[in-house]
Every structure is written in C-alpha cells, then in structure tokens.
Amino acid sequence: MQTQLLIGGQWRDGGNAERIPVLNPATGEELATVANANEADAVEAVAIADEAQKKWAATAPRERSEVLRSCWQILVDHTDELGELITAEHGKPIADAKGEISYAAEFFRWNAEEAVRIRGSIGDAPSGANKIIVHHPPIGVVAIVTPWNFPAAMLTRKLAPALAAGNAVVIKPAALTPLTALRVGELLEEAGVPAGLVNIMPTSGSGAWFDATVEEKAVRMVSFTGSTEVGRVLLKRSADRVLKTVMELGGNAPFIVFDDADLDAAVEGAMVAKMRHSAETCTAANRFYAEAGVADAFTEKLAAAMAEVKVGNGMDAGVSCGPMIDAAAIESIDGLVKAAVGAGATTALGGSPVDGPGFFYEPTVLGNVAADSPITGEEIFGPVAPVIPFTDTDAMIEQANDTEMGLAAYVYTTDIGRGLAVSERLESGMVGLNRGAMSDPAAPFGGMKQSGLGREGASEGIYEFCETQYIATSW
Ligand code: NAP
Ligand code: MG
Image (cartoon, rainbow, N blue to C red; front, side, top):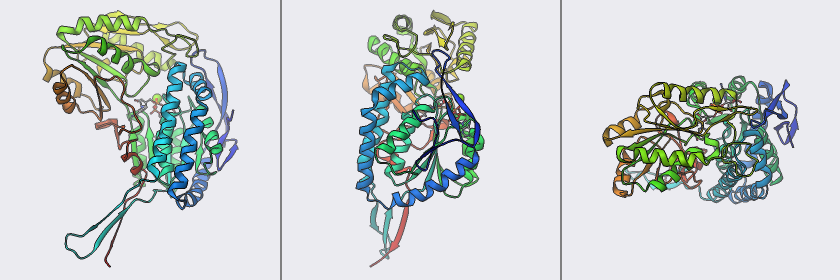
C-alpha cells in the first residue's frame, strides 16, 4: 500500500520530515504512517498539475470519457479491498464502506457520460447585430480538500467532474483518513489517468498547505467538503485571489414525522437517515420533530430499532455502527446528550460512551427534547436521536428553519400534497420525502444558507468545474 505523496506520478517523501500516524478508531492501533506534505510540495505539485492540465484539456472529450469509465471499472473491481481500507481507517461497518465505494465509483461513470455532453449555446443578440456564442472551457488547476467521514466518495464527487471537464487537481485528504485517497490515486493511475493530473498530499499542516496552494497563480478554483467553520476560513483565503469556490459544508437535518405517517416506514427511514456510515454523515437526521399524536409511539419504535444496533468493530459480522472517529468526537457527543438530559429530556435508550479500546458511543434516543436545546442547534455526528414533539406545523417549520444550516431535511407523511408543500417551505438544499437517503450522482447535492455554495453531481456538477466564455461575432 502506498503511504507516500503522489506528485507528478511519483510516490515521494513529504517536505515535513515527521510522518503522520493513521489509527484504526475501533482499536486505537496504528495502521500506518503517511508522508507529510509541506508548502514546497504544494507549490511543486501545482506547477506539475498546471503542465499536465494543458495537455489533458487538449484531449478529445471522448478520450477523457473513456479514461473516466476505466476509473469507474477499476474502483468497482477493488470494492472489497477499498471497503476494508475505509473500515480500517474510518471505522464504519464494512457494508457501509463497500456501499461508499460503489457510490464513489459511480461519480466516474456518471461523469464519463457527462464529459461528452458539456453544452454551450449560440443565439442572436436582441439587436440582431451579432451572434452570441457561449462555450465552457475547463478552469485549470483545482485545489480539493476533503473530510474524514467519506474518505473515497467526497474525493471522487469532486475529482471525477474536475477531470471530465479537462482540469487537473491537487488534493489534501483529511489527515485522519488519508490511506483510502492514496490507494484511489494509485488505482486511477493504473486505469490510465495521466501522471501529474491527480496529485495527493496528506499533511499535518492543513492551513499552511492551503495558503501556499491558493497563492499559486495556476490554481483557479477551490472545492471543499468539511465543516462550515473551516469553510469560512477557506472562503476568506480564496477571496484574496478571487477564486471560484464550491463549498459542501455542515448540516443540521430535521426529520419530520406527521400524525398520518406510516410509522414503521418512518422508523426505517429514520434508521437510515440517522445511522448509516456510523451516524457520521453531513446529511444525518439531527433533530426528529414528531407530531404530538405519534411522538411517544415514534420514540418507542425508534428506541426499539436503535436497541437492535450492534456497536463494534466495523469488520465484525452483524455490526451496524462502528466507532466514532476519535476521542474528541465522543466528548462532543456526550456533552450534547448530557446537556439535553440536564434540561429535562428523557432517555429512551443509551446515553453514554462505551468503554474503550476504541471510541464507541451507545445508540441513544432522547424523548421530549426542548426545541431550543443545544443538541438541536449543533451537528451531533453520532448515534443519538433527539425527539421533539410538536403540535403546530407552522411553528415546527419555523424551528426546523431556525439554523444557519440548510443541507438536508426529511419529511414523513402519507399525504403527498402536504409532504410537497412542507418540503417547499424547508430551507434545505435536499429533502427526502418518505425517504431516508437521497445521495445520488444523478441528483444535485448541496446546501442552502451556510451549508454551502454550488452543487455536486447531476448535470450542473460538471459546469462547476468549467468557465463560461462568450464570443460575440457575426458572419
Ligand atoms: P473539517 O474539520 O472542516 O475538515 C475538513 C478538511 O479541511 C480536512 O481535510 C481538514 O484537514 C481540512 N482543514 C482544516 N482546517 C483547514 C485549514 N485551515 N486550511 C485548509 N484545510 C483545512 O471537517 P471534518 O471534521 O473532516 O468533517 C466533518 C464535517 O464535514 C461536518 O461538518 C460535515 O457535515 C461536513 N461534511 C459535509 C458534506 C457535504 O457534502 N456538505 C459531506 C461530508 C462532510 P485536517 O483535518 O487533516 O487538518
Ligand atoms: Mg473536524
């Protein structure tokens, strides 16, 4: 397994002599150490990417499409191996990890199809004086920064459209989970991605790496997935060079259950929306609003389903919730739970960390949570479901929208007309209506408000990685 930096098709040491240890969060054991990039590595990688990008941009869209299709194939062929790597460094159950690889690979297949369908337009100026020709060249070199919660998919969701449109990239994976990214990079080279187009550099100095990268003239865009807090910092830095940015940031998803919902379906959807990938997703249901007539029944049924969750090492059979990423995560989850209980919430299930080794938290369901409890205002990022009963739909929607975030929301009702009307009123980039999962390469993924800027996937995803040029002419 490669643990060096990938720069210009070479596997190299990093400029920071101290290597970065990567731990298995289920055991606390060290899996490997990886090379550690410094500012000079960033500058060199950008120069190499710049050169590679010019050649790549000159290739036929069909040629790029074929390379992307091979990338899809090679990731699919390595699903088991990559899944095990994700489970080792992230902790999520192996079935979720393999599911992530299938999702991650799909961005290559989708964008292989989009690569040959980048559309411009031609029209007449209203005055009739000239033609208006619009086309979409690539941007150039893109800086990509990814989080630890989806070590493969958050990378390929950016990388595939960036390459499809004719760009080159420099990537900084999260220091907590760099191994998957490095292995994906190795496989992409095997699949025929030209050397220098994809450069991958773990670093323990994210801020310094980023500042050095975006100061390079060849870098024209930043694509980031991570917390809103860090997103704001990167936006400020990017502003100095007026870089194009796509930001996929934090979430705080409401999950709304109306009296007329199919409760079993709502609980099933709630388990998916809350618990998949060890409850560490940006789209995770963070607050459950249950209408008064079903609040107790929903809480009980959800607690019963959560009680069935087996917590443990994601590689073990039957485990459906792995460890949290680190000790700080456990502390933050437990703090939110203790504050909610202290303010009068009831504990229907769980409520405590599990003794180590590894960083585990009990599947937890809290009933009768106050609408203004801190747990409803912050991303929990753990297996905790606070249920807030409501009687007035308008007031509930106001509470659901009373957050800086606007990434995902879920609505359960058998009245589809009501479901659509409520969905429309939610300030959320994505809504699951009687669905607990919504991610799809063919759909626009992204947030409103401080959950982000721009969209990934769908047809618009590739245009985020394109410029728009207009040519006025007549003949
Ligand atoms: P994070 O703390 O914001 O880190 C994300 C990435 O930014 C990591 O690679 C991190 O590197 C890097 N970083 C941190 N400070 C930086 C700086 N000053 N300059 C440049 N890079 C910097 O987020 P996380 O804890 O990894 O991930 C969880 C968050 O991501 C949650 O808020 C979640 O909602 C969000 N998320 C959003 C989406 C979406 O599509 N909207 C998807 C997944 C996750 P190091 O950690 O290695 O320093
Ligand atoms: Mg973080």
